[in-house]
Amino acid sequence: MAEHDNTIELTSVNETESQFHDSHSTVAFAPEQVPIRFDETWFSYNSEAAVRDINFSITPGEFAAILGPNGSGKTTLMKLALGLLKPTSGRVLLFGVPSDRFTDWYRVGYVPQRTQATESRFPASVREVVSFGTYSGFDPFAMFKSKKSAQRVDDAMELAGVRNLADRRVSDLSIGQQQRMLIARSLVRRPDLLVMDEPVAGIDAAGEEQFHSMIRRLNRDLGITIVMVSHDIGAVMREATTIACINTDIVFHGPVHQLDAQALSGLYGFPVDVLMHDPEHTHR
Amino acid sequence: MNRAIVASVLVGATAPAFGVFLVLRRLSLMADTLSHVALAGVAVALLTKTFAPAVALVTTTGAAVSIEELRMRRLLPGDAALAVFLYGALAVAVVLISIAEGFNSTLFSYLFGSVLTVSTTDLWWMAILAVVIALFMVLFSSELAQVTFDADLAKINGVRVHLLNLGLAVLTGATITVSMRVVGLLLVGALIVIPVLISLRVTQGLTRTVVASSIIGIFVAVTGMVVAFYADIAPGGSVVLTAIGLLVIVEAVAVARRLSNRSKSHQAVEMQQHAHAHESHAHGSDDDPEEGVNAGTQSHR
Image (tube, rainbow over all chains, first blue to last red; front, side, top):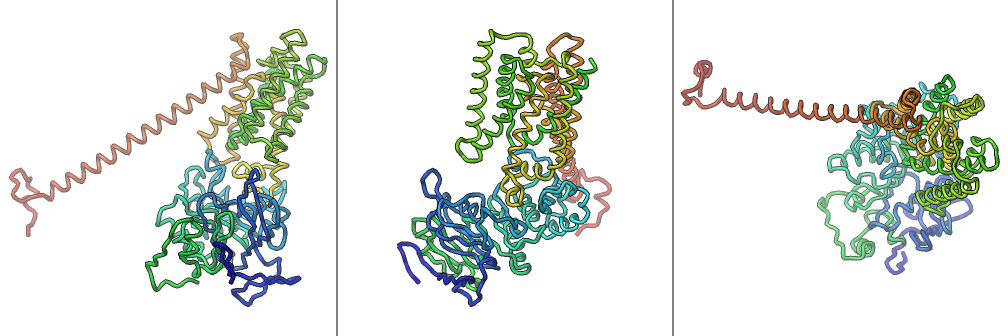
């Protein structure tokens, strides 16, 4: 373990020609199995660094949380991972392929914090939006094949708990219902990786618990790798297996039970104390 | 008159249907910008004595591609790029018009619309462009819907967002070129936007919204044109005022319905409260001399 300023390295990267090792397990992953890998990644907006020298990976089956204060680069990091932004230097690999050249999008689901449609009176129903998840490339005859995909759409809505909202207009949904709809959309093709950007922002406590319960099921029962961007420390420590703390640089990366007050203080720039209300609660 | 009706139907069907994707993506200003670019194209055509719709199509296509590239490469923010092209095109038009020794009736017909003077050539031109626009919307319906919902999500879903945006921008220019003889370049944006606002109020589902926008567009275009013919007023203004009138009616009905629902729910709450109070009173104190016979015959502790 090495310490550099307020950065704690807990993961050693031991890369051979065709293998990637996660030092917290003895499992070796081929590069194409690794959902996301940041390799000396930098990104700047107008010559001001938004993320700096990012080096870490997310391994299959992880429930990884990205934690940081506002403006720390969390969303930028996710957009780099998904190829929505191109790194200024370094590289970002999605299942072993540079993210801006990645094409197997059926393997990836994305739930943004907000969509463009949130701001307008988008007239589509929930079912229509979830059906977007069946898209597999330009096909002018797609509308004649809708019966086959209808079952997958129904299953995805059932899994995300929005089956009863199928015919409701998207613009009439609450924030929590919209998030569930977006998750349903992502689940239609049963992705290997699900990336969520602050998915519980604006949702009440009951809705949050339902949401986390569903995500836990997706990770544990279906084996979907989850990456969740959040600024909610409590939720992250309860739900995630690993955590990356970012404030332009990576301040901490490792198992969530190793995240301590010192790392959090370094992250936020003021003293932070962690109080566990449930001493029996174990981290996975 | 027959040609005018056909032109009105073509424009009424095409412009608002395409406008759904502009309005929902908050790109309504794109229509205004490209209508000013089309004006510059018309000015060039009048000066060089060439076919105005073709030159307008070329200028709007060039501007649309440039705006989209500037936006995509983040060289200029979206609204700034639109402003540069809008005022730049207007300035070009003004200069060219001054070189051509001022306004003439042909220029006015493009500025304010002149559906009654539409020629057969104009009609063929409009029909071809309308078919191309309709084909684009049908073939790329899924992609358009996804990009309209959210461009980032569409990209991650495998949609070629940049190409689609280019196609949208170019066809916006084509839509304006189709529409300019009916409502005029100054008001074409209104025909693209207002029927969409009406259909968003009355329909559900993206496909139905597109179809409803077309139907509403045809209705306001033909009605406005007929009114203009008999009242001898500018057809462009007549069409747009018809659209606005219909929008006001639809919004007024929506407000009335909301007020009526609110009043009904208040009445329901009051009735519930009244029933609850009555029930409490009926099971109330034994000592109350005002108690009725029923209460008096009830068994007590």
